[in-house]
Image 1 (cartoon, helix red, strand yellow):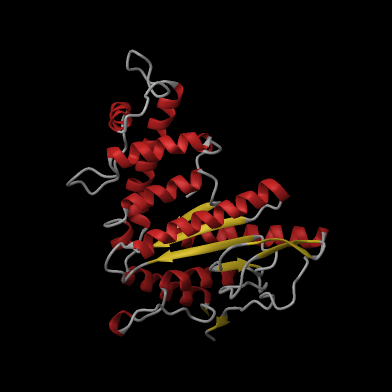
Image 2 (tube, one colour; image 1 turned 30 degrees about the horizontal axis):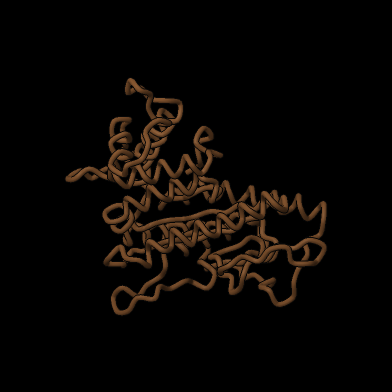
Length: 306
């Protein structure tokens, strides 16, 4: 999923309205398995319920202002993409397992350092979304290095000196965690029984990463692609519709380059990886990348099943 241009680069006040209205009006209607879009009337009622002014949303005759119309249009768009596309792209564990097996057979590859979840008993198995992502990336980078599981903080440098180091470890970086052209995070929760704080916190830390990279772009002129990849229909759709809305908000706020939901990675990720390779070759042809010894500069690679 890519952001729609008319909703990007809106001021933070726009998102204050979006969050306030959505929380009060509700993310989904009771008894309906769909994400809800708020109307102008719903927006006005939500603001009044919080004792907030409606002047910027509606004129004295109940007609939408420019801001009011944009808010309603965004809410309609968010609901449409979630109801019409995301809910169908999200996979359960069995579907993800089948896709992983099919991709391994197609590319004759297995994921580098096959990732296993932290569950126990029957639930202990491969992290299928992560494995799927690793296989697709390995199949499309032309044997270039890639850090599929960084064990350190991502660092950006200039003239061999660190400019920014992110606050937390990311799930992947290309070609390494030093000056990557692309980074990604994967949120898969196939066997989580409750949509608790651990899952919801994942959204907030992903936004933190996006905010840090956005600051890097604005302040230092260093542009890095940052992707969020999400799967597990039973949790995200059945229990976490409100957080899916927040992910779409985060995308349009500029804190992610794209968000890939479930099986969308099969068709979209190969296109992105080829673009990463092009950007990396172009950058290396202009200026050799600075590398910091011991900071994860020896990326892992996928291995063939042959």
